[in-house]
Every structure is written in C-alpha cells, then in structure tokens.
Image 1 (cartoon, rainbow, N blue to C red):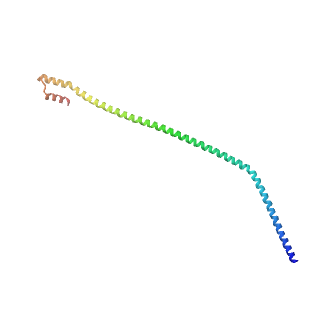
Image 2: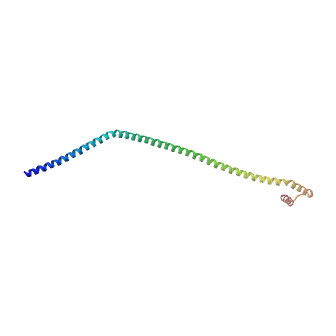
Length: 165
C-alpha cells in the first residue's frame, strides 16, 4: 500500500506538474492568439495602404517612362536639327571657300593685267622719250645733207647714238 500511496503521490505530483504546464501553455496560447489577432488587425489596416502605395508607385513609374520617352524624342529631334544646321553651315562654308578661291583667282588675273599694263606704259614712256629726240635727229640729218648732200651709214649711226645718250 505504501507503494501504491507513493505511486499515487507521484502521479498526483506529476498531474500537478502537467496541470501547471498545461496552464502555462494555455496562457502562452492565449498570448499568441492575442498577438496573432493584433497582427491580423494591423495587416487588415495596412493592406489598403499597401495597395494604394503600389498604385501610386506604378503611376509614378508610368509617368517616369513617359518623361523618358519625351526626353528621348526631344534628344532625337535636337540631334536631327543639329545635323541639319551642321549640313547647312558646311554648305555655306563650302560656298564661301569657293567664292574666296574665285576672288583670289580674279585678283591674280587683275594683278597680271596691271603688270601687263605697267609694262606697256613703261614701253610707251620709253617710246615717247625716244620720240622726243626724233625732231633733233631729223634736224641733224637735214643739216648734214644740206652740207654734203648725202648721209652715210656711219654718220646716221653717230647721230642716232649721240641722241640716245
């Protein structure tokens, strides 16, 4: 009987331990259920906000894509515009270069003409200078012929040489 009593006491102690442990687990379960419910409430509160934030994010992303496309189009348009202006300026530059070359060639031609005119002028001036002495030469030839009646080649050469000097 002692053994049964000891067993009974042991079982009773074990029952008390299990009962205490069960109560502790019930309390833990109750706290966990409470925390779960609170978390579920917060989740229910935050779900619409998450949806709203997600929609706002997607809207902003679409706006950003639109701005990107607009910028790309603007850049493309400006590039085309720059290329057009560049081509126009290159054409104008080529025209100005050809006009400059043409003007240089005309200047060279005019310079050659001026040089030719200078040479003609010098030649004419020399001719005029020589012509100024012609009346004197004719006078000396007349004088010699009046004296002698004729003019030798040597005398003509002497008269011309003396007047040219």
